[in-house]
Length: 316
Image (cartoon, rainbow, N blue to C red; front, top):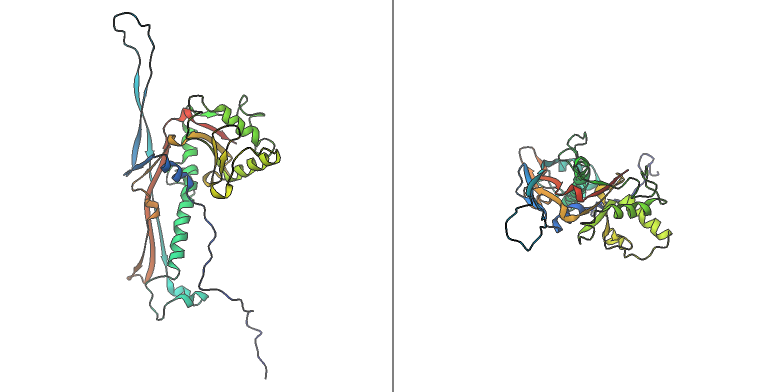
């Protein structure tokens, strides 16, 4: 007699005690706006950014009399939030035929899922990652359900008047550019810096933001040009100071694959939500009537800028 095993697949050990999840980039843009103190809380639908501006007209002194001059104006820009929810139903019994059965408790009724902590951590990071993209690429006219809940910065800045377009002759060498390459990326960033309005170029919170793909192209070009006069810790925060200036270049996941770059003050960006960090709150519960475990999260989010004329953009 011998073993008859031709119908069995070769054994591969599956570690049911550990689930390895891939890294998910967080919502860095939202964190930057929060650091600038421009989070508008309690927004149920829409709320305005209220802006006051005033001039000062110098007159000749040394004489009596009153000659009023000057204007103080009030304008508004609106942050409209999108209402978003995430819901998922999970049936633990579907795991009984798989290796995950070893993580299930004994018995035939389950009121929780195995690896709940790993699942919830992953879900929260995925929501943050998708929000990061929506903060920039959001468009209520999009067919993409993850992008059509509110308008993002790209659409809002693109529709605003007064924004400085740096992809023109006089700012960037060889402009207008049709692509970003190692050969032109250094002059591109130099051109963006040159195009920043003089009234804000020295602002402490002025940054140049780009996608991580453009950021890599730029750092490689600087390295190949032996321009090592910049401090860079890409693993920590994917940012460094633009050589010869005090302005930070910051890589953002939300701008990946767009070839869009912006120079702006962080204090010019506003984020509206109903409850601070509401996107991080969720509930996992057992629905007895359906005999399933459910995940639920719901939040509101929206953005806008206050002063479009202080923003420089490059859209390629």
